[in-house]
Structure formats: C-alpha cells, structure tokens
Amino acid sequence: MSPKPIRPEISEGRKGVGPLIPPLTESQRPLRQQVFELVRAAGLIPRVHLAKDLGVSPASVTTISSELIEAGLIEEVSAQRDGDAGRGRPAVSLGVRAAAHCVAGMKLSDREHTAVIVDFAGKLVADEAIPRHPGPMPLAEILRAIEMLLDRVCAKAGIEKTALSAVGIGLPGFVDCAEGTVLWSSILAERSVPVAAAATAQLGLPVYIDNDANLVALAELWFGAGRSLPDFAVVTIEHGVGMGFVMNHRIYRGSQRLGMELGHTKVQLDGALCRCGQRGCLEAYVADYALAREATTALNWGHKESQPISVLLESLYDHAKAGNATAKSIFRRAGRYLAVGLSNVVNLFDPALIILSGERMRYDYLYAAETLAEMDNLTINTGRPRPPIEIHAWGDLLWAHGAAALALSEVTESILVTQAREIAAE
Image (cartoon, rainbow, N blue to C red; front, side, top):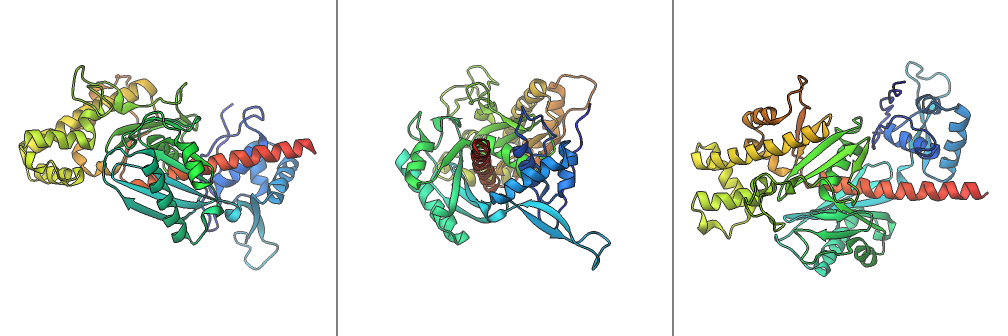
C-alpha cells in the first residue's frame, strides 16, 4: 500500500516547519510524537485531518491533542470557514504554541560566527553575526566567542539567556553529535574536544553540536526544499567541502556518526595537500583555500598572500569574468573535480535531489554547464535522468537555522518522552 499523502499546510498566517513524514506505526514512532510533529509540519491543522492523515481514530487524536494542550505544547486556533464569513462557529485548528520554548542555533566558521533564535514553532525571532580572523583557536577562546554571540543575539531578541531551552551549534570537521565531541575541526586548535559539555558548563544551558554540513541538510529538511523528500543530499562548498545526507526523512551519519565527509574522499592519489593533513582530497581542489592557493601560484600573486581569502577569491573571479585564461582554468579545474565528487554521490546514493549550498556558489564557474555535463558523463548511464540539482547561496544564517532545528528536535524529543513516562506512571 502506498503511503498516504501529507496534507499541505493549512495556514492562516502560520507556516509549518519540519519534515513532512508519512504516518508510521506506533512501534516506529509513538503516536503522541507523530501527532505533535504533524501539527508542527502543517502549521495549522484540524483534528479531523490529523486523524485522517495518520490513519487513526478521531478519539485517539482528541485524547492526545488534549494532553499536548494541557502540557502547553500546542494550542487551539480559531479560523473562519471558507465561504462562511459571519455565519456559524469558526473552525478550530491545532497549532504549536510558539511561546512554549525558544532555542538558539549557531554556526561557527573560519570567517564569521552566526546565530539565530527561533520560537517553538520554528519562526525566526532574531539573528546576529560576528566576524573573526581565520585559523584554529583554543577551546577557551571558542567558548568566549559562543557566549558573546549568544549574549548579543539574546539582547537583539529582547530575552534573557535563561529563557532559552537549548542551544544548537554547528562547526566544520569530524563531529560526534551523540557524544558531543569534536575529533578534529579547522577552527579548533585541539583534537578530541568535548565541546558540547564545555559549552553547556559555560552557558548553563543544554548544548547540542553537529557537523555544519549536516545542519545545512537539517535546515533544508525543516525549512527548505527537502521537507517533502525522503532522500536528498546537500553539498556545501565554503572554506571546506561538506555533505549532509537525508535518508528516509532523517540525517544519515554512519555507524560512528562521522560519515558523509565528501570533501575528504580522494580524487587524486598523492595529490594536493588538504588541511586535514592528507593528500588528494576533493576539497583540496574545490574549497576556497584551494582556489586561493592555486591563484597565488599560477598568477604570481605572492604579494597578495597576506590578503584575506575572500578578497583573493573576488579578485580571481573578476579576472575570470574579464577573460583571463589562467583564472578561468582554475575555476574550470575546480569544476571538473566537483563533477567527480557529485557523480560519486549520484552513483552511491541515487538521491532524489542534490542541493549545492554555500556562499561560494556565487562563483558560477563552479557549476557551469560544462561541469554538469561532465558530471553526467561520469554518472552511470541507466537510461534515466540524473537527480535535479538546485543552487542555494543563502549564507551562514541558513546553517544557523539548521543548528536551531537540531536544538528544537532535541527539546521536543525530551519533552515528549518525559510526558509519555509521566502519563504511563499515572
């Protein structure tokens, strides 16, 4: 039997967030959790539609929704029926009680740190960004930056830090989200650092961390193009190259929670030096530091080495646009290696969609027609079209939104599990 379609948003000024997941069995996911998640995904939805979409009895939905209302997690919202203006009782829908909780999401990067605060319904309350000098920093300095950024975004939102229920943080590198440990990151001077525990102690709030590319995929799953897709890939191209992969509406991380490191797949044996310390990694040919390194050598820009990478890249791009053959060849080479990486993603995972994300996607030479044509040549010819590719150059706030979604997910899970235990104990 094919899964029932998910009803589109019934929105009276409210927009749903979160993945649009088909109904599951009670053993796969508790019905209480499914009810809450469908309310959140729909924005506003009547009880009768909840029961129909989940394939359960109206009585079950009434009981569970009453418990969720009593717990302060959802609320009833009256809306006039279409064509019934001025007549009869207004229709009553269920929606997430936005004021129930607030969370913060942060993206830590080589160039700047960004943060957002969202309410329990996923609506943006405030955002903030602070610039930084590239390079690894000791943990103590990272923690000070996190606290300063959180103080600033809370001030912008007009709330106290203690009003937050959790903080989600994304950062580049090898991150074990379950243990809250960063095994290696380009922004951390130390290895195997318990960042989540250290930040929790510093802020006095629950802190959850994950690889930043995973959180871009989570942002697309909650707020963007991936909400209704069971499987899709997000490839991020910034100071490094990352990938987040959604499988069956969930982030796939691997058995040790360190998978999907597309940037560190090898495309050239004994090739260019990657910042991870190995040679021949994809990001050593595609990431911004790789393009800047090649430009410095090929264009004799040794005198520009002290300039920020962003300035070097803008100059390289301007030269390419002006017809400089060397500058064009640098982007062309990077595009060819990107085609290798993307074709490997298609051949391995067969995703429904590939999203190329990151500020560097402004440099359209990276995804020119020649690059996509080369990707097609490298992809297995099955006679079927390759997955579509979308370009999203939304900046670091998208990454911070993914970190906020991580915090929302953790808070929701904790609350609903606790509530279920209390009800079972009665």
